[in-house]
Image 1 (cartoon, rainbow, N blue to C red):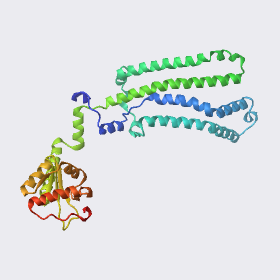
Image 2: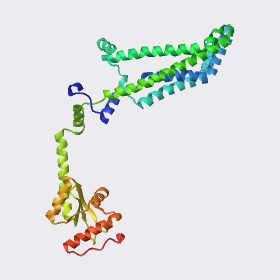
Image 3: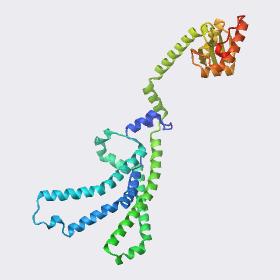
Image 4: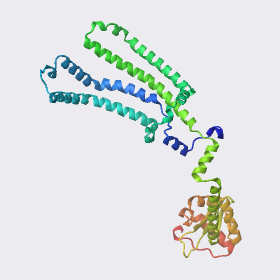
Length: 365
């Protein structure tokens, strides 16, 4: 449907990103988690696997050599359960830390890629994915061809890294016949673990590149057409007619407020047409001059028009108008650092009107 509206050339809106995330559409590389586990697994075995290997070796020797359970001519179910629990407890002490580290590593990789994302609806079986025709379309699509090519390339990389790793130890491997069984086993396990780590590092590099590609593809997939942006704005904010009506009402309310506030002002400070700030000062009731109205653009023109109709002086002071418009809210007094400038304009206005100059606020003296 999106193709009917044109090409996707617009950056996705925050709402579009959130909707895609809620639907499970995120940038993620499946290979990144596999590569990290392929590195983390052998490294964990090298660091923590010594106790596990020692236990398994001792257990095997004990049982093959005639363990306590096998040496009994008669034994009960309780005896078997006791041996089973003891073996399982000791095995858990060595195995659980390794499994826990692998679990935490797998979780950390996924969280770093997509953050915390819980989508229970994804657990519901999707019958449409059982459609063989759609399956064939996915299999023979461009993305399927890319995945197949990338998979073959990964197999080639694994083969090359494994060959080079084993080739470096060719002399030692050829000399294994002169070693004992224990030494051969220990050496083979070590070389296999380090080969797995090297393969994992190579796959990690490819996985990082794949994640970059998935990130780029994700950004391309969630881009929007101009029509889609219009439809989203219409759904979130209402139709353009409603938006225009709302703005018109807001503008009318602002104009009505100006009609009531500007006549109270003693002067209007302008800049010269873009901004207008109406200021009132009643020494008997006010500690400082107060901004009773301000506006820019259309509102500034309205303030000037009302001031001209009421005979309120309009004084052009560009820096002062900008400062008051930016720093002072409506119905708030002028800040102390602007007293002198405002008092100068007030004195000028009072002289034009032939009025007595009011005493400045005590804090401005």
